[in-house]
Image (cartoon, rainbow, N blue to C red):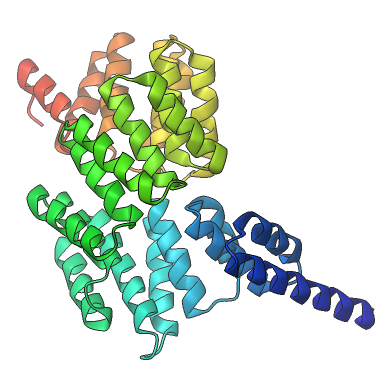
Length: 361
């Protein structure tokens, strides 16, 4: 048995080395294949596979493999970054804290990245003072890197200072013109501001630099969707799913396209995929609730909407949808209770409803 184990370990090391050689030559597909053959016997192969998938922007699967690697500062730093990309901020905090704990003073790049992840976690909770404190600590470690500038831009955007956010993203692009995060963030900013043509221009320029970027294709698809060009949106989103079948947002947006066409079964298929991939996010549950409401299946709709509020009790959009559902069922007291809760959480539509009805919230 011992001889067999040694042989298996040797084989795993050989596959790992082949994977590393292929990766160094830019043969990502070949490297991925070698790493996958070695993951059962090598924690290092699991880490290298996770790092490769992270670089290819396949963050959901990358996080799965990094979580199974040995617990080192490098693996925890990369895991936190992937969890941030997947909007899994609770787990990202734990991973980033562990990365900082494991790193030493010589690991300035790792420490800085983990601190940036901590900043983004705090930003997600609207704790902007702590977020900026982590940013300043990260800058002391490694200077104004593109990732740090992108994080600063995100924080400024969440605080309502879009002009400063755009300056941060442009600074990141000046340092690294091929930085996909900066192109993505700029494109997203223009989408939020309703400048869809500008977003499309920024994202297409980014794709000239990185023509296999999943996040740029996704954001471009979103921009086309907002512009009303569902054909081009579908093409972009399908490209994303061809590269990364676990891309949660692409499944949700594809579901939205099918929903808009009245193809509800196809929409539900995509929403279910998204819910399986990211059970920690409420959006897919909310979208399934909307779809079942549209088809008159109110019991199923309510079940999914309530599941969304269990995942995120602060999700004001879902409470507003629940209120609308109760209105359709002619249950005014329950509708009012949910409109009031949505209004207290900041939902503008619910607040307008309360004002029209003379209801204090």
